[in-house]
Length: 245
Image 1 (cartoon, one colour):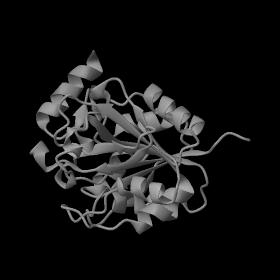
Image 2 (tube, one colour):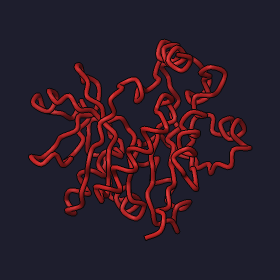
Image 3 (cartoon, one colour):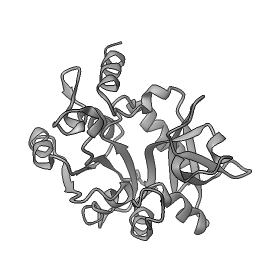
Image 4 (cartoon, helix red, strand yellow):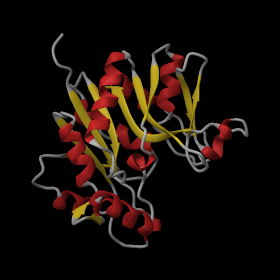
């Protein structure tokens, strides 16, 4: 078997209202580089042959900032959730049959070594979907990873849709995934929006895979800071300190 083809989708369409700034969240600088530069570097270092960035808020400014990087830009005109965002890239990946790494444009501290370890685990487990997760003492606010008796992932439930029992789960979703390409785009086309947010959650691909009897795994990252999302100016400062240390 030849080397598996790897492509990456980076979710970067959000406005980032809590940043209290007119600038698109992914363009805020960390140590002199726009935040989005960090996941782009991870995608490259993991061996991606194609990198698609889903843009929305200030799409033209994001394109302009990264115009010489050889990226594919796909616009999400309406913010209808992460599942909807990935669906926008379907045409760009029409002929791809390999693995898709899904990264978040506002998670700049993920190490390329972690992304490579996630990919290696995904391949060794022959998984259809592998979710990068982290254990938190206080998991409130995050999507919980619900597992079966053998450690297989059954579903990811968002906090506002979780039962009291599910809220006790400490393993949370980081928003980073490895998914087999053909399954990914079939699955995101099936996602509904019957949830508290009325959005198309990318996390629903886990339940879709389970329903079809396809293997879903989780890969736990040791350092919680690696998967920290940047939502506020304080988060941005904290990330800057971690990048320089």
